Length: 304
Length: 304
Image (tube, rainbow over all chains, first blue to last red; front, side, top):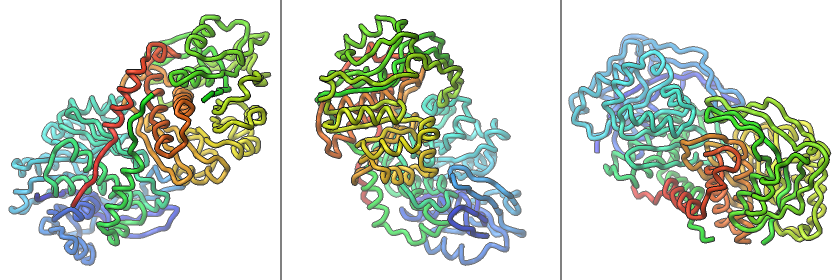
């Protein structure tokens, strides 16, 4: 099935205990699309400035990512400058330069409008809603959000939540959204806000999916080479949506597999900066890690 | 197989958003023994003061817990006073009154010395070492510890770690012990300190076991009725050790099952204060939750 991904396209400057890199390609749409591209073609929607290096667009194209919806606007590309300390569970922001992203209005090419699967990466809820109104025929609509919108655009966010099937959200955000510290209670409360499924991303603790008589928890794949967690959540969502779109099967069993695929994809993403690990990733490596994770989590009945 | 459990016996006064209870029975040895008693007899070692209500001893006996090793010393029982706020992941201590526990020297009854499984709940590392020297024939020696000993008795703790098979430790403690924020790296570092297996307890995020070509991660059982997390870690360890002792099987598959049993037992413990939930717990309920957790975590292969 066809998958459309809308979100930010960025040039990130990131420092972690494992290195420092300036103006490397990032952004929610880039991380998600690259992960999804392992499972089929992607229709990308985003905006860059005139300074965005052509090599990144060439790379996206080489992965089967359609960049017809990637607008090149007058001005500079969105930039994020941040760093991680020894404990890489927390990202510190030094600067966010919105540049062309500040006036971003997603423009959906005509042929994208038939996309059956839609992932709305983290952009303003009102823009997410505008996009949803253009793809009313989509079979599965999913969105990600962030602490900023929960705080400043709560009403718009709650409005758009009613119109999607799947919400991707991290543990801190779902606590913020609901005011409920217990993640299980928070997820149940959030289900009442509209979407059929909630996927809670918990970083090093893995992910949960809850909804419609489904509860599934997947631990993170054990990674001891953690270089740069930037984009891990988007990579997760991209892998999840890519797999779902590829298989076009919304059974509970298949949604579980999508969570595991997302988990595996994000475990690769964090091993190197930017898209570097995904650039060298093979399908065989995905299978290997998926199957290893099955061994790391499976157990059998007891008799007493 | 016979299981000996050494640790604190306490009267806790606890306030949480779900109630307030004064002088309720607690302590590492009590929580662990009660959980283990679902799987077979337990030899308990601890100390109480003259004020310790006989009804609690009667309860322990009724569960098949041998209290011959429970010394009644002159003075008052160890007391912990604490509370939980809305976010129950953090316990606040108001007061710790060591009382008779301050001079505790575990006295191991002769017949306990043949115990094949030994769990050393959280007491000073030097006392844990003394006990280990009395049960040299034990097949499996396990211990729990805490932030205080990691900070103040590091050398003694490292000494005793070399002599045990299994270390139970929580995520904050293993980071403190190793100075390593990445849990996987921290667990691997800790394996080099001596024990064959490390069980990392992560509260609402579940537990890991690592060691000897084994890696297994079990998410927490989803509990939305969280009344009092006190003793959850000890209940986990008691369930784990009780199951292991009952089955007397140290295969990797069985160690995984022990982690799941511990996870299930602790999920019950947190639902009510003190031992209240375990007092009404049935084997059928344990099986039900164990099997549900299998469903909540299992997934099958993908083909792309």
